[in-house]
Amino acid sequence: MHNSQSASATPADLGSAVAASSAQVENSANEQVSTFARVRETVGAYVALTKPRVIELLLVTTFPSMILAQGGMPDLWLVLMTMIGGTLAAGASGVMNCYVDRDIDKVMNRTKRRPLATGQISPRNALIFGWVLTVVSLAWFLVFINWQSAVLTAGAMAIYIVGYTIILKRRTAQNIVWGGLAGCMPVFIGWSAVTGDLSWGAVMLFLVIFFWTPPHYWPLSMKFKRDYANAGVPMLPVVAADKRVAVEMILYTLAMIAASLGVYVFEHEKMTIVYPIVALVLGAWFLFSCVQMYRKAAAGEKKIGEMKVFHASITYLTLLFIAVAVDVFLPF
Image 1: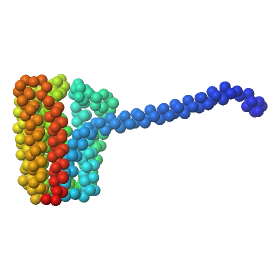
Image 2 (image 1 turned 30 degrees about the horizontal axis):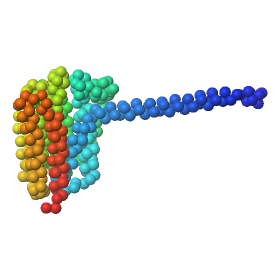
Image 3 (image 1 turned 90 degrees about the horizontal axis):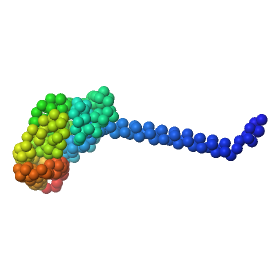
Image 4 (image 1 turned 90 degrees about the vertical axis):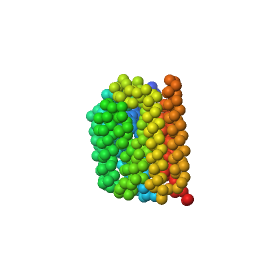
């Protein structure tokens, strides 16, 4: 009977069985690929909530500050631990910002694709994620760095989440000026990680970023002023003419240049004459870009090159802090 049944199997039956088996394998493989794609997409969405590009800029100022505080290369393990803690803290602040601003992010073209605005991540999950990062980052600084850096980190997060995002952003045109204090704190955090305290050199670096923030962010606000207006956010370019904004940018830039030279005044024993020369050249270059924008705004031109100034501001800060780091190692 068994042999009879085996003999009755035709080549067509065998082909169908092979085809069915292949289809099952293919479906299983597709399901695995689909699951992997969904996981990757979800992880990417959570990462996007942390605002990675902002984190990069914050870390650019932290490492050079640590080098200047040390007067040379600090312990690399300390640098790594500080960078990890800073990444976690900045990421937590970014997530909380997205959580609070999820309503206005939906109506702004620049932010409408953020995971909370699209519904890819729920507000509850984002809030949990933000709190987890907050707790972990503060614990990280307490365990691996010191209590001073942990306190400064908590202060930076409070300024950004409560001070800027919740209180200032929707109430005053000076929101980014005072809210920008949070972006200055990585200098203090990195410095205190190395020395356990602060100095006037750290204060000058802090002021560089404080005065840099308005001429960095206001050009971006000019580009997206309609978005901010629709969202009811009174950024200065929304409530003031471009000419006035450009004037204030020039004034802040002059103060920024003075602070950058102040770094050398207080830390000249660790630095060479190369740094103030580089700081002056970079400052003059960025000031010129702001003056050009003012001239175009004063002439009533529609295209005043605001995004050119925005990108120039990032280049300026990056090169200035590279100069801070490199100058310490110069042999003269």
